[in-house]
Length: 249
Image: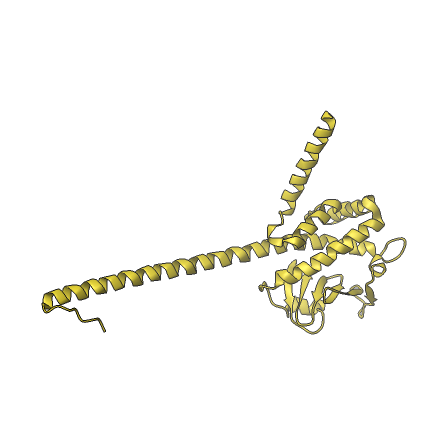
């Protein structure tokens, strides 16, 4: 109920009520505009963050795709299976088709590598990279995925914690690759990189030494990590400047 005006003139009371009502309307409209603005900003921010997450996961997928090719070379090392040497347990394939699995407990969950996917599986939820479909999935099943289950997709999509769990898998991949390059040497891994690009010409990826540097930046802060091609251009420009500086000396 509107407050009574303290005056005897009915016309004055009506004008006062009208002014009070107009003030109320202005306040309400201002509040509504602010709320719509905040909602719009929040929605726009959420959309931008979702797009950024998709982009950084796409870059991580490109790197992990190349790593999976390298792992296939590592099991054939002249001095023995490097995945096993690193401490992974080989689980023989159960069907005529497919490849063996490799498992290792790491980061409070299990790293599992397979020919068709790679994943980290924690006590409650995990994350899996599906190589054939080039996608990341949250994994909410008790058992690691099979090729047929990934085809149907029994995981869910880009939830808020998917990127956080993808970092765990990428961090393990970076640590392992650092160790594996010590076994192969720079020339050995570069030969794998050339073979990978020849086999998958549309799957461009960074050279092995630069890939490790990029992996480190991605793991430290995925949303701030540079795009791989921009990273390559920046590193090549840096090396060119250093070469000119040394030449002038």
